[in-house]
Length: 221
Image (cartoon, one colour):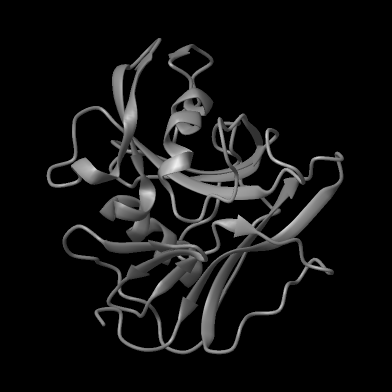
C-alpha cells in the first residue's frame, strides 16, 4: 500500500513538468507551460519501493488547456540505464531526495499497468492512502497477460502519444486526452484492453476518456 505523505517537494512535480513538457513531441503548446493538476490515480509497487502515479495535467498557458496524461515514478535512487527518462530530482520532506522518471520507461510502472489491465490490481486514489479509485475503468479480452516483464521498457514518443513494447503487445498511452461523449469510451480497432479515467476540464466540468489501450500484435516490432 502506498502511503501519501502530507509534506513538501522542492521543486514541486508541476515545476519539474513545466521544464520537461516542451521536450515532448506530443506536447501541443508553445512557450512556457503552466501545468495544473486535473486528475489521475496511483498504483502500488508490490515491493513498496517505487511510487507510481498517473497524473493528468492541463496547461493553462495554452488556448483550450489541453489535458495531458503524465505517468511518473518516484525512486530513492537512480534507475540504471534510464538516464534519458529522468524528468528531474526533488527533495521530499520525509523521504529525502527522489528521482522522478517518465513512467513509460520504468519497468515497475509498466508491469503494474499491465496488471491493472489484466484485473490483478486496482487503481488507487491519487491523494488518499489505501483507497480504491472507483472512477478508473479497465478491460481485457483474450488470454491473461504476462505477470513478469523483463528489462527496461522500450518506449517511443510521437505526436500522438507513447508506444510501449511489451510481451503482450504494444501499449499506447494517449498523452493528449480527448473527452468521450459517454462514460464508457469506445476502444479503437485492434485494441484488446484499456484503462480509462476522469479529469477536470478548464471550465471545471468533469470529463472521461481513454488513458491507455493495449493492442494486438507483437510488442517487439
